[in-house]
Image 1 (cartoon, helix red, strand yellow):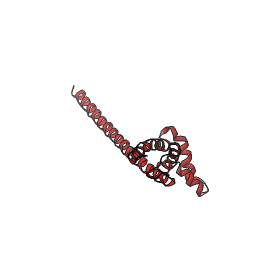
Image 2: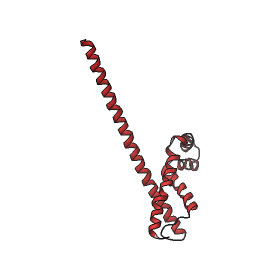
Image 3: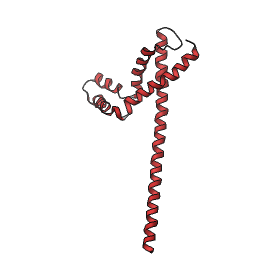
Image 4: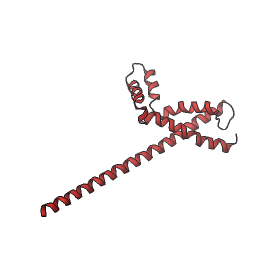
Length: 140
């Protein structure tokens, strides 16, 4: 495969990896299994059990598993056509997927901040209107 095509695959293949990793570790649809894994990662008796369940709750850690699945599914190799190409592809995909997830997290945080600021302004405006209406009523 040409190096240009490999780079395009790298950027494109990282998108579903990031999407799946983020969804499983953060979104409401997987809340119950996520909470169950968090509980086990904190409370299990054995360290190996705690670490295993932690790997299912961390988007960075989970992205490694998703990447392995996509490497098998797509037979994607980066730069080299042997087992080393799989290793390079795997770590490169994890890196790119986590850049995408970080950018997504920053975007969501900015949107939440804007919503909070808008709600605060709306509340202040409503309070000012109520104060003005109250003052008008007391003068009438």
